Every structure is written in C-alpha cells, then in structure tokens.
Image (cartoon, rainbow, N blue to C red; front, side, top):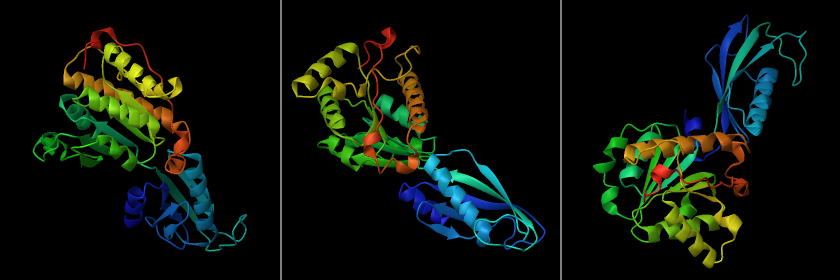
Length: 295
C-alpha cells in the first residue's frame, strides 16, 4: 500500500501483481503481492523465473499503456521452458497483474455556481482535481464541504492575484476548464494556457460573442491561429439544452470524460509527465443555440 501511495503521489504508473492461485508447491502463498514500476519493485511473489516474467510483463504493460488486468500462469518444474533460470518447486502459480495508471488531472478555474456543480461530479471519479479561484469566499471549507466524500484527490488553490500562475504548478497532461466570474480573468487565463505546453485540453465556457472578442484579443497579442485553436469553446455536449448550473455541469463533465478517453488512446499515462509536448490539440465546435447567451 505504501508503494501504491508513492506511485500516486509521484504520478508514476505501475502494476500490482498478486498470487491468485497455487497448485502444488510454490515459493509464496495465494494472496502474496508485489508492486512493479518502471524503475523499481516492491515486495516479492516468489523470485526466480516466476517473478522475472511478472516484472517483464508488468513493465511491458506500463509501456503499452494497458488498462485491463491480465493473468499469467507459470509452471515451476524443471521440465518447463524458462527464460530466467529454473524453478523446480513442482507447482503451478497464477498471477493477476492489475495496472495502476497515473490518475488523470483536471483543473477548474472559477468555482462559482457552475464550477462547484462540476467539481461535485468530477470529485466522484478517480482523478486529481484542482480548484482555482481568485475569490476566497468561493473556496471556504463550508462551501466545499459537499466534496468531503470525494473519491478524487482535491487540491484547492486560493490565488487572489494572477490565478494563471497556477498553470505552472499543474501536472503535465492536465485538462483545464476556464469558467471564472470575470471575462478579463478568463482571457488572461486563455493567454497563459495557450503559452503553456502542460495542458492536454483547454476548455472555455461562454457565448459566441465572448469568443469572438477573445479570439481577436489573443490574435492582437501575437498568438497564431493554431495556438488559439487549442481552446475549445463552447464546452459540453452540443445537443444537451438548459442553462441551469447543474445541467451545464453535467454537459461539461461528460465532455471532459470524453477527452480522457481520447487522451488514453494516445501516449501512455506513464509518459504523460515526461513528454508535455504530446498534449492533444482541441477543436472548437459550433455553438449550441440554446447555450448561446451563457456567460
């Protein structure tokens, strides 16, 4: 458990290996566990060829970005073919290899009515959730008490001045959503976000009129069309109507979860923090008519 906690805290991928069945004699009993990372191994499932095969396959799973568990069965007989030395205990061992992927990271800039509803939904998922707001009253313990039962690891950033500085603290591959109370703050965040290579996606809430002004301002500030095109606006499901905060939050959460699926099909999570240049470029979609006036 300490090894798994270490992997989570350092945002490193790993594999949990468990002996799930033993037939005959074997060096460890069912239930024995070890954790494998790219550059380390904790505990043991029996050593020898059995363990070497498990470590080899676990590291291949990490490199491949495998998310589905696998089983591996090995005979401990001097007549069985071996790659890493002979084990002649006489039994047979089946191992379960369970991937421990890097948790996705999401950041909500602006924890107002929509932001808090979005946080409530995302907090129920296994991810790192960063909440950023320049207004201290939006991040009080009382207001965020609705997240006390969160599955997510929630990080609260109270930044009264220049919230865009938080972008440099976020893990590489973070999915950022910009929905503050202030359009000037939003455009400053957009400017900083497209200068950063740490973000997988950049989402902006707002109307087409807002985006027209923002796009002009970003272009006047020297950003290329390709850089500006990294921003997706509006965010959410285009066919889901409604302007209530909870409805918008459901729509945006669904969109974000779709981005996780898209990102998972690219480079493995194990390399996300090492290769920030692999961030996915988002594509803007037509503005849903029924959300035209939002923000």
